[in-house]
Image (cartoon, rainbow, N blue to C red; front, side, top):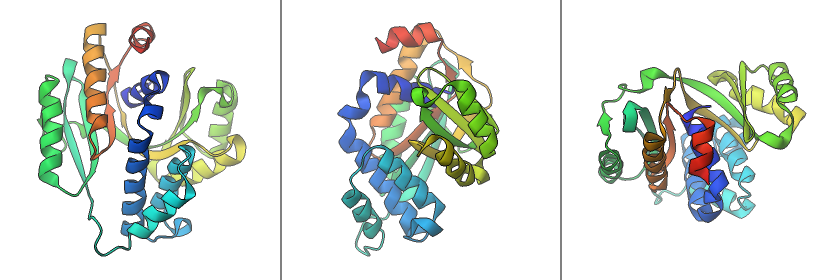
Length: 248
């Protein structure tokens, strides 16, 4: 399973999402606002906004919060966010991609660079890491939604290309352009997905030992804690026994 998914799983086991619910809502609100501003404020005609609202509902974000975030997109005096992507290398030489939404490039760049430096990594130029990843559509369900065979069958019927299942999650992968069609088909078979988004999927993963894994996860958490960061992707692989030990 990709580093991004492993990190999300370890967060879930530690209850980090519950502790950071206010931050999660803030992040989702920001994505809804920029999605509505860049397209139409109607989710039926704006796939990105529809995806953002799906993610917000999966986190039990109140309807009023969602509507406020959409209305904020039309506020002439509101903040103007822009999307900025950072790429670099972390402990063990892993590749890291950081997606941000920011109203201050200098602040965000400084914050991201500080985390890379403190983690023993370094920022690279745009394109220095992303060539090792593919842009894919990814729909996620919890591991207990159904067994792996049932999810795989539903995924193939929906037009997906691959499924990666573990005890924690089922990650259903498809062509980037087919994400919304696949997600809609899966909703009919498995119910509304907690997550449906375009992700950076590593072409190959780098296995890390326990010492490096601890440093990597600490770096991922530090990046994820930054206010301007929306998503963090990396190409590390942690053996299940090490992951269990670090999750304890």
